[in-house]
Image (cartoon, rainbow, N blue to C red):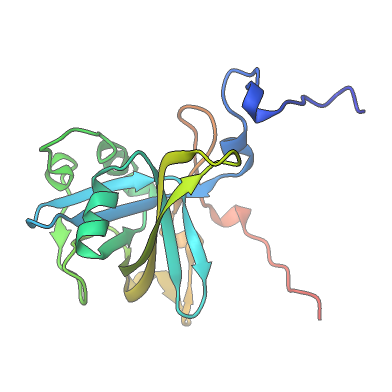
Length: 205
């Protein structure tokens, strides 16, 4: 065995200052998820367990450790909206992560709850991209030993998309121009997508 490797089994702990797995599997897209409760109250919160899992139809999903308002609202209404988290909105994204009952995160973070095209859940008006979604399934996760975990994964089919035209160059979405922010590892690490990080590689034929 290479003596320069740190090796461990997660069930016994990692023995480090901070769990390395989220840092290794990152930086990760942030699912800035807005929902509407059954009685019409808006909610928005960031989730760093988020991604796309199918092309046609487009299926996205976010996972919540703990059954938080976003999951409960998505379950009750069958809807949620993904909003792009950008560098200019980073502080508002962070503010919206506060977990307090009876708090309107839109108002707390100074955000506009803008109407959607198809769903009743609001989108973040300041975000340059939003994807309206209808829930396809909600799955509570399980561990290898059969334990049911306090983590819920919410899948949704994208039924409407909003993109600021400034981010479309000759019909191609410009990821770097949008200044996406991504969740890194450690207690407070984030990354910004920058043009100098771009390279292209075609699949072999």
